[in-house]
Image (cartoon, rainbow, N blue to C red; front, side, top):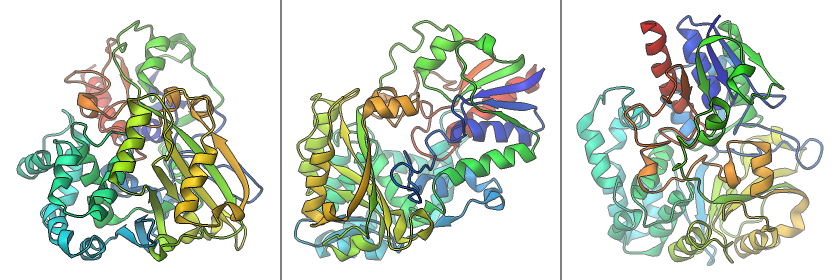
Length: 469
């Protein structure tokens, strides 16, 4: 009998399996698709030689993850590549605000009236970032805070809506960039704890940047899988699990799946009936005949580029998708251009480009034209560079990855109390009604992102049970 079976070979499932195998437990992973990866994959979606990331592409939380940093993933091929600028936010006048590794450079891009306010916001947390991120991403209940005072100060700053936090800024440049940071989790700016979301992304950039993985996000998953195999773990692909009886006998079962899928497989009925999924996204992967022709010079060297003219336009787009059940006329966009630092992604002189906007859950329309009209505002002539495109709306995204219910790439709404209390109100969020069944997906704390911390935290709950048995 195995000690543990993990269902789902995304970053969280693989991390949970690695953590258990490192502690001497026998582990097997079962994945429905023919390769490992989950939200960290790389595929030729458009033309031969163009390597795209179907989901996650830039990894501020990955490079800062306490779980990943404790593992020897570089030995197994993972290499973080840092663009000259982690992120840029261009404006229609041809200028841009930036999120740089340097706090001073970032503050200066906001203008003299807000530079001091930004420095006062982030500088108190940076010297204690490693402890703060460990405390922040390990909650709740998996580890005692190492620095509860700093964590409490962070909570006071971040738990109010981001609109409260950005009220300290006088000009639109800082407000717009920060609104875009909150938009990464598809949350309206007035929501609970949205200030913390924006602050985490900013601090992550200053601490270690927003890198891409050389060769694509698949290298993260491949490194985890290779390390697991060296530890004696097994990985079975092309193995769809429809009920617990499909799995071999084990002392514990760990699911890197949505709560909805887990309830169906394990027969938990309506246990997760109140779990809310968020809006979907419409994503386009481009093969380009050269770099994106950004008007703003700063955007040409940034790995990630946010698209939204101002904070009002961004909030309007987020509200349309999440609360008004309509696709926005001018979508807020997150884009990634790996080619500014990784020439392996496309043939010489060519580029891959990754872009998405928010749409209602399950939306079946085509947002391509709206996205490209937005791009043309900040990069005139963009359409002339397009060699091929691969589009995926909510139905296609959900078909590729069953955790993306309704096209929600966060595997659950990041709004209200569900920001902190997911998949439901519980002192043991990784436990389930069955004492031997656990959940470790992005539907559990600390939530979305390729960071492995949900798997890391869930593994702690599993090995405590295994040692007590």
